[in-house]
Image (cartoon, rainbow, N blue to C red):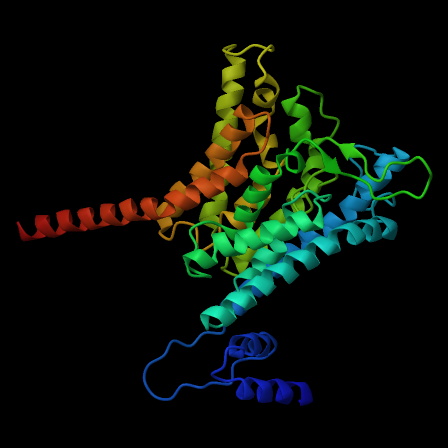
Length: 402
């Protein structure tokens, strides 16, 4: 009660001043609002923006924890070379606390920088503009460390976060007004500003090793990087589904992402229409590429051959497609709002993601660009869906009055 009372006193003390938004943000984050309504008709619900954001963060926790384990696991593979394809979750080689600690030491600073810098910028804008601090960055702050390479320099991440919050959100008016997904805006900035760190064909797989002469980091190719260069992939379908592969922190385990997706759907936060249609779009594009190869329309000498021959369903398990389709394509602010629009929006994301993945071997990943592109077209899709409904209703009305 003492802390709550002190915060309440500070809130009252700075009420009406420039610092009011900062104290209000801390107070409402920790406690329920104490305002009550009097008279009139109101909609009563148990959810609000803060709790919606918290539910999404809860859905991301499995990916974060697994990412820490897998980072340490990749470290031990690089050092000891003891990888066994198809190993189970009950293998002692994986569920080793040493794996978790190695990964946590490398990943937690990314989380701290993402939240620290992002929330600082949010507070500064709230104080300058005199509005309440918005909770939208709670999810973005968790997404960002999960979609970047593990070895991204912290200063580079900090610069990208500032750019993403200012350009991706605040210039549009803040949470609920942005047209691009803020987390993907941050990743896009890193991709275009520092392409050598975001190429997609090299990832951090080990931390500093004490032995003299051992490099601080070892680069290991992702599956997409290997396929883009026509190399043979040594990982089984189970390895790819479970997440025992190199990659960005939260994107490797399709299993953990699937659990998060089910949680979001059950909580009615994530759109199952967008998730399912994106999956169907990716499978359709993958089938088309497989058919092109089967018909002999492209030869082995083509630089696109390796990714085109990849079994169509493997595209769901590799790269960042599953993570993007579940956690970022479904962003309620930047996605389509109509039900029919969600089917179109999601399908095109999946379709374009695999197209970019195959036709851009220099950067063999397309989900980021596909989602950002469809963020721009989402309002247009909804416009034509609504206009189509209006025209059909006018026709029915005209037929009845005829």
